Image (tube, rainbow, N blue to C red):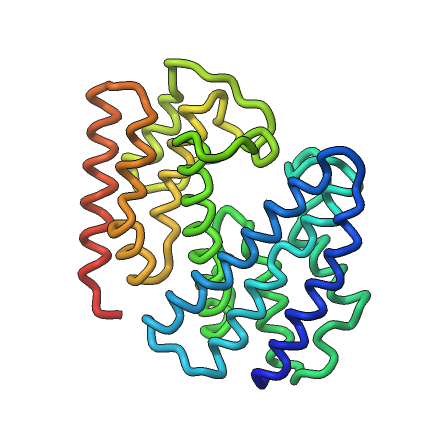
Length: 262
C-alpha cells in the first residue's frame, strides 16, 4: 500500500459522507460528530503506531483502518437515528458492507485488504478473539486503542460541559448517586465490565474506566496517564471510599503497564 492509496481513500471518504450532510433537522450534528471522531482516531492511531515502532507501510494500513472503522455509523444514523448497535445493527458489520459494496480496497493486495477489514470487524467487540494471527492482532489492537483514546476525550469533554451530544452517543442514561456493585467488582478484578450492567451515568463512567484493561499498547497506557483520563472521569463520580480505591487501582495498573518497553 502506498501513500497515494491512503490519499484516495480519504477523498472517497469525504465524498461518501457528503450525502449524509443533507439529513433533515439536526441530522447533520451526529454526522459531524462521527466525521470528527474519525479524523481524531486517525491521528491517535498514527501517534500510537509510530511510537510503538510500526513501519511507514504499516502506519498507512493502520490509518486506513481508522479512516473506515466507523463508516457504518453514517448509514446506521440515517436508517435508525441511533448509534446504539443493540437498537439497530452492528455498525462494524454495516461498515464492512459499505466497503464491500463499493469495492473500496480493490486496488490493494488481498492480504492488506484482509488486515484492514478484520480490524474494522473487531474494533467494537468487548474483547478480541483469541484465534487472530499476529498481524491481525497488531492492527485490530491498535485500532481499538486509538478508538478508545478518542472516545475517552470526547466523553470527558461532554462531562466537563464542552459538548451536548451525550444522549446521541449512548441514548438516555439517568443521573443517579448510585452505581453498580457488579461493575465495581469487575473493575477490581481487572475485567472490562458489560454494557448490560449499566443503569445510570455513574455505571457508564465506570464502564469507560474499565476500558483501560483492554489497552493493547504500552504507548496507549502512557497517553491515558499523560492526559489524566482516569482522574478526569472519576471526578464525576460520587465521593465514596470504594470508588477512590477503584481510581487508585486503575492508575497503579496503568503505571505498571507504562513501564513496559514494548
